[in-house]
Image 1 (tube, rainbow, N blue to C red):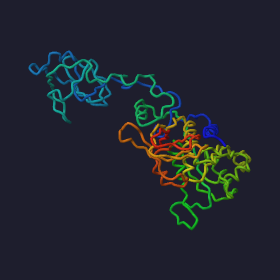
Image 2 (tube, rainbow, N blue to C red):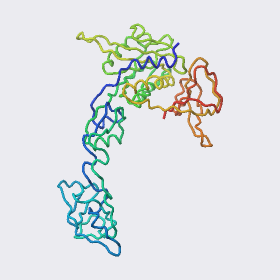
Image 3 (cartoon, rainbow, N blue to C red):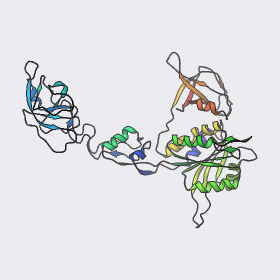
Image 4 (cartoon, rainbow, N blue to C red):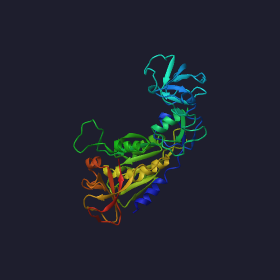
Length: 419
């Protein structure tokens, strides 16, 4: 029987290193930058005003006071977006808007509220009066004060979020090289499964694992696709695998890997020898399998594609816990992304029992202790692997080590935070 760490290593070995792809900024959202991104230009690209007001030469206002105001003629009006080059003559002022280019010769901006000018959408007056001096450099944004041309904008491995998109767009970058998102196809098996929205007959259940695991793949940053389930028939199962092999970087199956009489996934893939089925010393999720599936040759004789495949148990709690423990970290690493899930130490809110010899992952809910000093995790729900309700309520998995058969209330435990 494998340990959790051993099976994690086997699963990780299925994936290669991240592969670069060029994407638009909107498509790159949530992806990791592949290589450093340097600024092709400076931000700001020119000296500009940080306020609506008047561009001046600070020396012209050195003697200004309420008792001895200084009045200057307004020689120009500079809205944002004006592209011609202006120069300020000493002894004059230019009305200027936020973001507008600073005229040559000006070294400060006085906010409109600190003058006698009318605030609002009105034409500039012929003169403007100041009642206080202004410091040279005040209310200016100097060229390159944000980032200079050639400086590092994003280091390799940066996850592209809204702020990064804003920076890249401001630098005039329309596309960025990122680690390619992987395509995950989820295939559910079971003759008892019915698509949600259709009527059930006695003995049937709605298919939920496929939808859940597809959502988990998308949450992990992959491109998830759920292929409708196939009945417990090895021929149909292998045919469906061949159909999707060319459209996937990873195939994930759910169900059919235990020791029953109708374990279609295990029966079909054991015969091909492409997948190793094993038991992992964990609860839930002991039956596992992974390997590489090679599709049948194409009608023109070209070899079929080979794609990694991971086979998960059919019980929903087992399936999702297995995804979190084995697939998510390996999948994200292959896309250049950080693990994402945080691990914290929390105090146990109730006694728990654990099967010795198996690493247990119990559902839990995190809260702050009433003293505000500690994080507490409360176990929820019975240990059964079919309890979807408690899985949906949980925001954490309590990670109980293999050698432990019980943990008392108040003890420190390792917790995987799910959201």
